[in-house]
Length: 321
Image (cartoon, rainbow, N blue to C red; front, side, top):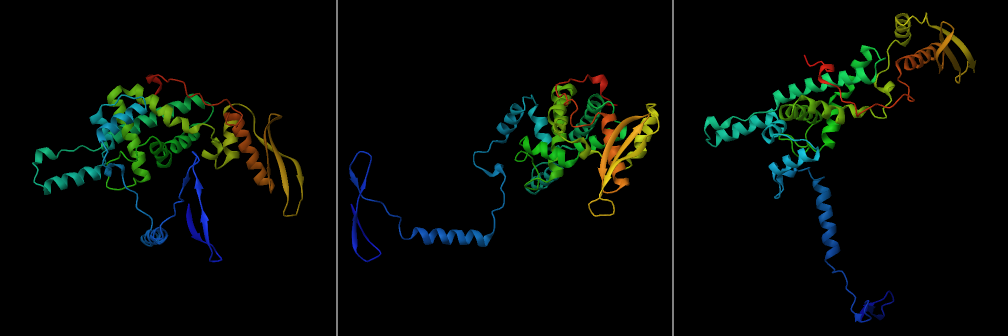
């Protein structure tokens, strides 16, 4: 039971009942709590957002345990010294050497390896396997298309996306935090190199397939690679496959001489319709139709058979040389 003053200035009696049926006094927030919280919020707003801090600064951080757990999460068996080297950026290694020199540590103890060699090895393995996988999965696509898709899969943006979601952000030994997109990408390449040295190149191939090639899943290949001169490329492909010379034909149009004009163009070769497209003018509709025809000839349509990410390409099919 407790007293409080109402809006009219009359003292009122209140009581609160607990589950057991007894009467307990109602607890009130102390008068100093609200101004204190407002002051703390004001100080935080004045100082700006808190800078991100690495997990290594936490008391319970155990780097060796984190490296071991990283390999187990990926279901891979790494040699811990190699895995640690994969996360060691050259800038961090140089910084540690300078710090130890200032502390007077012997020169023989300053040898800290960075991940430069592992990055080069991992990048070579990833590029070789991605190219082999694309030759298997997209056999009708020309070499120029394979190069564009390979560039997309091995770009810093794509590799950094994979690296970040594998949990490398807090394991990277670098002078910057959070690590940049380039650092994340190079670390993933170094991990591939460390895996090849730990378990063989075949295991590294499977890693590339499972984590890099799978970025093509449910992707529109036309967004990754769009031919710059579709009619010229279509003409070359038709000549190679003996399909005849492609010929664009106007199928329909509406709204001529207006801002809402639309044209429907079809491309034929040897009296067979290869593709059709729409556009605001005949030239744009022709290019759209040529791209549609190329998608059909290269088997790049959205309705194509999904990528097979269970295939295991043998080493002789991957050009490592």
